[in-house]
Length: 466
Image (tube, one colour):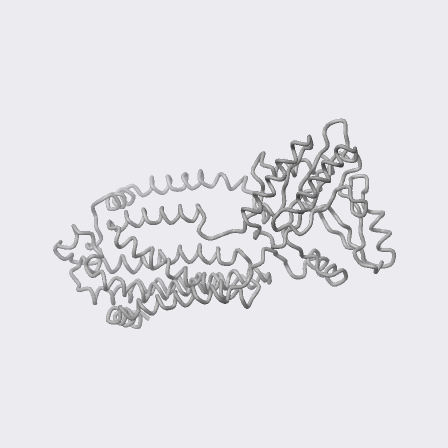
């Protein structure tokens, strides 16, 4: 394989302009395809065969699909000593509901005092209005969110305690947030220190970004034909950028070693791809096998994420084996720092590795005091891993402390009971299902049962939304 990869590196050097143009054409084609063929992603997760999944599927079959647009729960509490049914409070509540129903993007806003479907507690002190939008979760625009928050703020002037929570205030996960930007900046600094030149550091990051861009654009195109999770492209981008930088680093570092030995640029490129390229292919195949192996779990969204990320890794490997050598060919001996370009050739590859500078002195110190370095590394890793003991994972976004979302959830818990923020839908089947569901529902806590279908044999309990 080393000989084959060496010939591939030599070809990338000879046809460097063609290689660069081909990759740019693929990137542009991906952008055009993503702009014209992209579809919608989904934020819902299900595990086939689980009891909850079976129950939800049965409910959809019997009562019709319950999927609706993004919603928010505007929670209202009456002033102390009054109830929401008092004339003044009922008038203020009606005005609030009317204002909510007229907000941009809102399809409907329910009235907590609606006799057909009341959403108030038994004491009539706390209730909530469900505000439904015409778009899915994560698609409510910032302007629409601001209008909702402004309506809630205005409603507090009537004396009511009003807070809001729900999907409508949540933003869909996006690529290119502050975390990703900070990571890229740190990567540039680390690469600049490693290479000793910003030109090579930028080239490394740029080639990795090309691979990630093609992978993510390909996933975006696939959303027009497949139902993919909204997190699929994020995982692919994270892994693709990480391995893209690493794989290019392998080849660039070996190329620079060959240049320090006095080898000409074409030979250095072929040798680098033939030697370090073997490590790139092996590492890439290992990662791809691990990711594609997620299909063993039998969970569709994990399988999709694994295959999409694996495809992005394949692109990163191809970029490292072709685009990186082509760009190195354009750079020539500028791949080395200025102070190393005119040094006499090193006798061997080992001698070609710098023994001076920060990293050289660090390597000498670590190898000289290896026992101390090993113990220090173990202690440092132990300290860093301490937060793992209190780590919490969830697919549900936790609102910031003392935000309107947090206060809304607290109002719901105080008025209806702690379980309202984590509702469970229970499906009753069989003869007398409606009667059994009614008897099993604790109406004293403000919960009600409903039968959205005239068939009495299957009745789900309706619980307040979280």
